[in-house]
Amino acid sequence: MSLLWAARAAELKLEFGESAAGQCPPGFRSLVAGEGQPGDWRVVLDEVPPLLAPLSDKAPVVTRRAVLAQLAEDPTDEHFPILVYEGQTFGDFTFTTRFKTVKGQKEQMAGVVFRLQDNRNFYVVRASSLGGTLRFYKVVDGQRSPPVGPQLEVPRGQWHELTVECRGNQIRALLNGREVLPTLGDNSFTKGRIGFWTKSDAVSYFADARVEYRPAEPLAQKLVQDALARYPRVRDLKVFARKGGADVAQVVGAKHLADLGQAAGSTEAKVLAEGRPYYVRGKGEATVVLPLRDRNGEPIAAVRVTLSAVPGQTEENALIRALPVAKAMQARVATLEDLVE
Image (cartoon, rainbow, N blue to C red):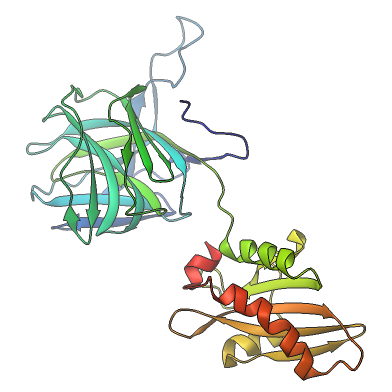
Protein backbone atom coordinates (compact mmCIF):
# COMPACT_ATOMS: atom_id res chain seq x y z
CA MET A 1 0.00 0.00 0.00
CA SER A 2 1.38 3.37 -0.98
CA LEU A 3 2.17 5.92 1.69
CA LEU A 4 0.79 8.66 -0.52
CA TRP A 5 -2.89 8.93 -1.09
CA ALA A 6 -4.91 10.54 -3.77
CA ALA A 7 -4.85 13.80 -5.03
CA ARG A 8 -5.87 16.86 -3.11
CA ALA A 9 -2.96 15.98 -0.86
CA ALA A 10 -0.78 18.90 0.15
CA GLU A 11 2.88 18.95 1.13
CA LEU A 12 4.53 21.02 3.83
CA LYS A 13 8.32 21.21 4.06
CA LEU A 14 9.78 22.13 7.43
CA GLU A 15 12.77 24.16 6.30
CA PHE A 16 15.66 25.08 8.59
CA GLY A 17 17.92 26.76 6.02
CA GLU A 18 16.32 30.18 6.44
CA SER A 19 16.90 30.21 10.19
CA ALA A 20 20.01 31.76 11.70
CA ALA A 21 22.57 29.24 12.92
CA GLY A 22 22.46 28.89 16.68
CA GLN A 23 18.79 29.90 16.92
CA CYS A 24 15.62 27.90 17.40
CA PRO A 25 13.69 27.94 14.10
CA PRO A 26 10.61 30.20 14.11
CA GLY A 27 7.20 28.57 14.09
CA PHE A 28 8.21 25.92 16.64
CA ARG A 29 7.73 25.64 20.40
CA SER A 30 9.95 23.76 22.84
CA LEU A 31 8.24 21.44 25.34
CA VAL A 32 9.43 18.79 27.74
CA ALA A 33 7.62 15.61 28.70
CA GLY A 34 8.50 13.87 31.94
CA GLU A 35 11.12 15.56 34.10
CA GLY A 36 13.85 18.17 33.65
CA GLN A 37 14.11 21.33 31.60
CA PRO A 38 13.07 21.86 27.96
CA GLY A 39 15.68 20.90 25.38
CA ASP A 40 18.15 23.16 23.64
CA TRP A 41 16.88 23.17 20.05
CA ARG A 42 18.99 25.08 17.54
CA VAL A 43 19.87 25.23 13.87
CA VAL A 44 23.42 24.00 13.18
CA LEU A 45 25.44 23.22 10.08
CA ASP A 46 26.21 19.60 9.29
CA GLU A 47 27.20 17.41 6.36
CA VAL A 48 24.13 15.74 4.84
CA PRO A 49 24.01 13.35 1.87
CA PRO A 50 21.59 14.28 -0.95
CA LEU A 51 18.08 12.84 -0.91
CA LEU A 52 18.49 11.56 -4.46
CA ALA A 53 21.43 9.63 -5.83
CA PRO A 54 23.86 11.96 -7.67
CA LEU A 55 23.68 11.94 -11.47
CA SER A 56 27.47 12.03 -11.75
CA ASP A 57 30.27 10.41 -9.80
CA LYS A 58 31.83 13.87 -9.65
CA ALA A 59 28.89 15.26 -7.66
CA PRO A 60 29.58 15.91 -3.97
CA VAL A 61 28.74 12.99 -1.70
CA VAL A 62 27.55 15.32 1.06
CA THR A 63 26.74 18.99 1.36
CA ARG A 64 27.11 21.17 4.42
CA ARG A 65 23.79 22.76 5.27
CA ALA A 66 21.42 23.78 8.03
CA VAL A 67 19.81 21.07 10.15
CA LEU A 68 17.85 21.02 13.40
CA ALA A 69 19.74 19.89 16.49
CA GLN A 70 18.82 19.07 20.08
CA LEU A 71 21.96 19.94 22.04
CA ALA A 72 21.02 19.71 25.73
CA GLU A 73 22.66 16.83 27.58
CA ASP A 74 20.41 16.49 30.61
CA PRO A 75 21.05 12.96 31.94
CA THR A 76 17.66 12.74 33.72
CA ASP A 77 16.19 9.38 32.77
CA GLU A 78 12.56 10.49 32.32
CA HIS A 79 13.52 13.57 30.29
CA PHE A 80 11.96 13.93 26.82
CA PRO A 81 12.67 17.19 24.94
CA ILE A 82 10.09 17.93 22.22
CA LEU A 83 10.08 20.61 19.53
CA VAL A 84 6.55 20.98 18.17
CA TYR A 85 5.51 22.65 14.92
CA GLU A 86 2.94 25.33 15.80
CA GLY A 87 1.66 26.18 12.34
CA GLN A 88 -0.98 23.51 11.90
CA THR A 89 -2.69 20.45 13.30
CA PHE A 90 -2.94 17.28 11.24
CA GLY A 91 -5.43 14.43 11.10
CA ASP A 92 -4.37 12.07 8.30
CA PHE A 93 -0.79 12.58 7.15
CA THR A 94 2.60 11.12 6.25
CA PHE A 95 5.46 12.67 8.24
CA THR A 96 9.00 11.95 7.01
CA THR A 97 12.29 13.20 8.40
CA ARG A 98 15.93 12.23 8.33
CA PHE A 99 17.70 11.94 11.67
CA LYS A 100 21.13 11.24 13.06
CA THR A 101 22.02 10.26 16.61
CA VAL A 102 25.23 12.15 17.43
CA LYS A 103 26.17 11.35 21.01
CA GLY A 104 24.93 10.56 24.52
CA GLN A 105 26.23 8.62 27.48
CA LYS A 106 22.87 7.38 28.76
CA GLU A 107 20.81 7.55 25.57
CA GLN A 108 21.30 7.99 21.83
CA MET A 109 17.75 8.43 20.60
CA ALA A 110 15.79 10.41 18.02
CA GLY A 111 12.15 10.29 17.05
CA VAL A 112 8.98 12.13 16.13
CA VAL A 113 5.83 12.99 18.05
CA PHE A 114 2.48 13.22 16.29
CA ARG A 115 -1.16 13.92 17.02
CA LEU A 116 0.24 15.79 19.98
CA GLN A 117 -2.29 17.55 22.23
CA ASP A 118 0.20 18.78 24.84
CA ASN A 119 3.28 17.49 26.64
CA ARG A 120 1.21 14.83 28.43
CA ASN A 121 -0.78 13.47 25.49
CA PHE A 122 0.78 12.32 22.22
CA TYR A 123 2.09 9.44 20.11
CA VAL A 124 5.81 8.88 19.49
CA VAL A 125 7.97 6.68 17.26
CA ARG A 126 11.65 6.71 18.18
CA ALA A 127 14.88 4.93 17.29
CA SER A 128 17.72 4.08 19.69
CA SER A 129 21.32 3.59 18.63
CA LEU A 130 22.48 2.40 22.06
CA GLY A 131 19.58 0.02 22.57
CA GLY A 132 19.27 -1.06 18.95
CA THR A 133 15.49 -0.64 18.88
CA LEU A 134 12.64 1.13 17.13
CA ARG A 135 9.62 1.70 19.34
CA PHE A 136 6.10 3.15 19.22
CA TYR A 137 4.20 4.20 22.31
CA LYS A 138 1.52 6.63 23.36
CA VAL A 139 1.40 8.99 26.31
CA VAL A 140 -2.03 9.67 27.83
CA ASP A 141 -2.29 12.00 30.84
CA GLY A 142 1.45 11.65 31.27
CA GLN A 143 1.36 7.84 31.45
CA ARG A 144 3.37 5.93 28.85
CA SER A 145 1.96 2.76 27.29
CA PRO A 146 4.05 -0.41 26.88
CA PRO A 147 6.34 0.06 23.87
CA VAL A 148 5.82 -1.81 20.59
CA GLY A 149 8.61 -2.44 18.09
CA PRO A 150 11.57 -4.59 17.05
CA GLN A 151 15.23 -4.86 17.85
CA LEU A 152 17.29 -3.49 14.93
CA GLU A 153 20.54 -1.66 14.34
CA VAL A 154 20.44 2.14 14.14
CA PRO A 155 24.10 3.11 13.75
CA ARG A 156 25.12 6.33 15.47
CA GLY A 157 26.63 9.07 13.31
CA GLN A 158 24.71 8.05 10.19
CA TRP A 159 21.66 9.67 8.63
CA HIS A 160 18.50 7.55 8.65
CA GLU A 161 15.00 8.22 7.30
CA LEU A 162 11.98 7.78 9.55
CA THR A 163 8.41 7.88 8.18
CA VAL A 164 5.16 7.79 10.14
CA GLU A 165 1.77 7.55 8.47
CA CYS A 166 -1.62 8.11 10.13
CA ARG A 167 -4.90 7.38 8.38
CA GLY A 168 -7.91 7.30 10.67
CA ASN A 169 -6.91 5.14 13.64
CA GLN A 170 -4.24 3.26 11.65
CA ILE A 171 -0.56 4.04 12.31
CA ARG A 172 2.39 2.79 10.25
CA ALA A 173 6.13 3.39 10.56
CA LEU A 174 9.06 2.89 8.18
CA LEU A 175 12.79 3.14 8.82
CA ASN A 176 14.97 3.74 5.78
CA GLY A 177 12.07 2.80 3.52
CA ARG A 178 11.33 -0.51 5.25
CA GLU A 179 8.16 -1.09 7.25
CA VAL A 180 9.38 -2.00 10.73
CA LEU A 181 6.17 -2.02 12.78
CA PRO A 182 2.93 -3.90 12.29
CA THR A 183 0.08 -1.56 11.38
CA LEU A 184 -1.22 -0.30 14.70
CA GLY A 185 -4.74 0.76 15.58
CA ASP A 186 -5.45 3.30 18.30
CA ASN A 187 -8.29 5.74 18.93
CA SER A 188 -6.73 7.92 21.61
CA PHE A 189 -6.01 10.91 19.34
CA THR A 190 -7.60 11.71 15.97
CA LYS A 191 -5.60 14.84 15.20
CA GLY A 192 -2.89 17.02 16.69
CA ARG A 193 0.47 18.64 16.11
CA ILE A 194 3.72 17.06 14.95
CA GLY A 195 7.25 17.54 16.20
CA PHE A 196 10.68 16.14 17.00
CA TRP A 197 11.67 14.14 20.09
CA THR A 198 14.76 13.01 21.98
CA LYS A 199 15.48 11.48 25.39
CA SER A 200 17.76 12.20 28.33
CA ASP A 201 21.26 13.33 27.23
CA ALA A 202 20.87 12.31 23.57
CA VAL A 203 22.21 14.85 21.09
CA SER A 204 20.40 14.30 17.80
CA TYR A 205 20.04 16.05 14.43
CA PHE A 206 17.07 16.24 12.04
CA ALA A 207 16.86 17.29 8.38
CA ASP A 208 14.63 17.15 5.28
CA ALA A 209 11.39 17.03 7.25
CA ARG A 210 8.16 17.12 5.29
CA VAL A 211 4.48 16.38 5.84
CA GLU A 212 2.11 15.13 3.16
CA TYR A 213 -1.49 15.52 4.28
CA ARG A 214 -5.06 15.92 3.22
CA PRO A 215 -6.14 19.46 4.11
CA ALA A 216 -8.86 19.28 6.72
CA GLU A 217 -12.17 21.00 6.12
CA PRO A 218 -13.05 23.13 9.17
CA LEU A 219 -16.22 22.12 10.96
CA ALA A 220 -17.63 25.61 10.32
CA GLN A 221 -17.56 25.03 6.56
CA LYS A 222 -19.07 21.58 6.93
CA LEU A 223 -21.88 23.02 9.05
CA VAL A 224 -22.63 25.61 6.38
CA GLN A 225 -22.74 23.02 3.59
CA ASP A 226 -25.00 20.69 5.57
CA ALA A 227 -27.35 23.54 6.55
CA LEU A 228 -27.69 24.73 2.95
CA ALA A 229 -28.56 21.20 1.84
CA ARG A 230 -31.09 20.81 4.63
CA TYR A 231 -32.63 24.28 4.31
CA PRO A 232 -32.67 25.13 0.57
CA ARG A 233 -34.63 28.35 1.13
CA VAL A 234 -31.64 29.95 2.88
CA ARG A 235 -30.24 32.50 0.43
CA ASP A 236 -26.90 33.02 2.13
CA LEU A 237 -25.13 31.68 5.19
CA LYS A 238 -21.93 32.71 6.98
CA VAL A 239 -20.25 31.75 10.25
CA PHE A 240 -18.04 34.36 11.94
CA ALA A 241 -15.48 33.52 14.65
CA ARG A 242 -12.18 34.76 16.06
CA LYS A 243 -9.54 32.52 14.55
CA GLY A 244 -6.08 32.09 16.04
CA GLY A 245 -6.74 34.52 18.87
CA ALA A 246 -7.51 37.43 16.51
CA ASP A 247 -9.23 40.50 17.95
CA VAL A 248 -11.72 40.69 15.08
CA ALA A 249 -13.96 37.81 14.01
CA GLN A 250 -13.88 36.70 10.40
CA VAL A 251 -15.82 34.40 8.12
CA VAL A 252 -14.75 30.81 8.84
CA GLY A 253 -17.60 29.11 6.97
CA ALA A 254 -19.59 30.42 4.00
CA LYS A 255 -21.86 29.51 1.10
CA HIS A 256 -19.50 31.38 -1.20
CA LEU A 257 -15.85 30.44 -0.58
CA ALA A 258 -14.73 33.88 -1.72
CA ASP A 259 -16.26 35.25 1.50
CA LEU A 260 -13.89 33.26 3.73
CA GLY A 261 -11.66 35.56 5.76
CA GLN A 262 -14.03 38.55 5.43
CA ALA A 263 -14.04 40.65 8.61
CA ALA A 264 -17.14 40.67 10.79
CA GLY A 265 -19.37 43.73 10.86
CA SER A 266 -20.80 45.56 13.82
CA THR A 267 -23.84 43.28 14.06
CA GLU A 268 -21.73 40.14 14.35
CA ALA A 269 -19.57 41.89 16.95
CA LYS A 270 -22.67 42.67 19.02
CA VAL A 271 -23.89 39.08 18.81
CA LEU A 272 -20.53 37.78 20.02
CA ALA A 273 -20.36 40.35 22.82
CA GLU A 274 -23.97 40.10 24.00
CA GLY A 275 -24.86 36.51 23.10
CA ARG A 276 -28.28 37.39 21.67
CA PRO A 277 -29.69 37.45 18.11
CA TYR A 278 -30.11 40.54 15.94
CA TYR A 279 -32.48 41.14 13.03
CA VAL A 280 -31.31 43.01 9.92
CA ARG A 281 -33.96 44.22 7.48
CA GLY A 282 -33.08 44.24 3.77
CA LYS A 283 -34.77 44.80 0.45
CA GLY A 284 -36.47 41.56 -0.51
CA GLU A 285 -34.68 39.63 2.20
CA ALA A 286 -34.39 39.24 5.93
CA THR A 287 -31.19 38.52 7.82
CA VAL A 288 -30.85 37.19 11.35
CA VAL A 289 -27.50 36.93 13.14
CA LEU A 290 -27.52 34.38 15.97
CA PRO A 291 -24.90 33.18 18.45
CA LEU A 292 -23.26 29.76 18.51
CA ARG A 293 -22.10 28.71 21.97
CA ASP A 294 -19.45 26.36 23.32
CA ARG A 295 -20.17 23.59 25.80
CA ASN A 296 -20.02 26.14 28.65
CA GLY A 297 -22.64 28.36 27.06
CA GLU A 298 -20.23 31.11 26.00
CA PRO A 299 -20.80 32.69 22.55
CA ILE A 300 -17.93 31.69 20.26
CA ALA A 301 -19.37 32.39 16.81
CA ALA A 302 -22.06 34.37 15.02
CA VAL A 303 -24.21 32.76 12.31
CA ARG A 304 -25.58 35.14 9.68
CA VAL A 305 -28.67 33.59 8.07
CA THR A 306 -30.11 35.42 5.05
CA LEU A 307 -33.62 34.44 3.96
CA SER A 308 -35.98 35.60 1.24
CA ALA A 309 -38.51 38.01 2.70
CA VAL A 310 -42.12 36.82 2.98
CA PRO A 311 -45.29 38.92 2.88
CA GLY A 312 -45.74 40.69 6.19
CA GLN A 313 -42.14 40.01 7.13
CA THR A 314 -41.45 40.79 10.79
CA GLU A 315 -38.51 40.40 13.10
CA GLU A 316 -40.37 37.69 15.00
CA ASN A 317 -41.14 35.44 12.05
CA ALA A 318 -37.63 35.96 10.61
CA LEU A 319 -36.19 34.72 13.89
CA ILE A 320 -38.55 31.73 13.90
CA ARG A 321 -37.39 30.81 10.38
CA ALA A 322 -33.70 31.22 11.15
CA LEU A 323 -33.60 29.43 14.52
CA PRO A 324 -33.70 25.85 13.14
CA VAL A 325 -30.58 26.58 11.06
CA ALA A 326 -28.64 27.77 14.10
CA LYS A 327 -29.95 24.96 16.30
CA ALA A 328 -28.80 22.31 13.82
CA MET A 329 -25.32 23.85 13.90
CA GLN A 330 -25.30 24.28 17.68
CA ALA A 331 -25.89 20.56 18.22
CA ARG A 332 -22.50 19.82 16.63
CA VAL A 333 -20.37 22.51 18.30
CA ALA A 334 -18.41 21.98 21.53
CA THR A 335 -15.43 24.36 21.35
CA LEU A 336 -14.08 27.19 19.24
CA GLU A 337 -11.11 25.01 18.26
CA ASP A 338 -13.43 22.31 16.93
CA LEU A 339 -15.21 24.93 14.84
CA VAL A 340 -12.25 26.59 13.14
CA GLU A 341 -9.39 24.04 13.03
